[in-house]
Image 1 (cartoon, rainbow, N blue to C red):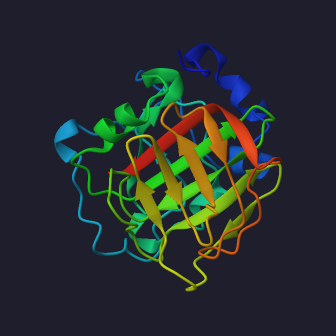
Image 2: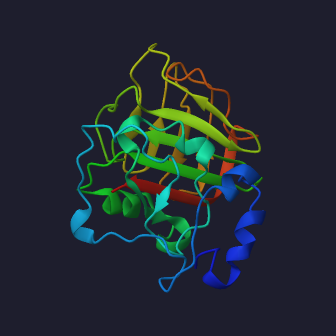
Image 3: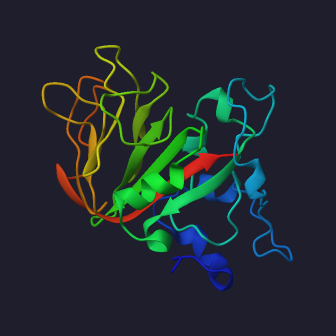
Amino acid sequence: MSLVSTTHIEEIAHIPLLASSSTNALQVQHSQTGLGLKINPESERQRDFSTAAPLGSPLVPLLSNPISFSILPSLQLSAELPPRTVGHMWHLAYSTSLHGSSLKSLYRKLNGSDSPVLMVIKDSLNQVFGSFLSHPLRPSETFYGTGETFLFMLHPRFKCFRWTRENSFFIKGDLDSFAIGGGSGHFGLWLDETLYLGRSSPCYTFNNCCLSERDDFHVIELEVWTFW
């Protein structure tokens, strides 16, 4: 069940992972369709991400799911996304609170998509962090992806970790885990097949610090956003 409902929209302003300035600028409007957020038909799942949106396009996230989100995206994070995502609608493709905690289920939800992916994690210590992936998460024999991929911390402080060009260990999907960033046996972000046990370590790919307060963490909520 979603942690946010239409009868408790006023609580959004109190979600701790959002800065007040980001919350005020989300431009969520009430209407007869729940929160008034635009919904695209499934037929529009595939979009052309080869070109950037026109200059002047708003950085405000356009959310396609009216009530099925709990970890809201922030303007601070959306401003860091690659230009090719600007102007596209944010679609909540997977959420552990809605779809359960299974890596295989996550792979199925992203199967056939060509959209980049924004993964946001909230752990048991209320730390919020994640990764932007240049390509959808999928099982793979080797690392894949491009230098658009990055790691970030969102709460309690915001910081992005970009590609260092030290290696190209961007994304690696296995049936029992997945990893983002690597080098010398350490992964920038790693989750097991249950999407509950995770680990974050400094890695050469992004020269990041540990994203969570502790190296090993427990996932309370995970959301995966794609762009329509």
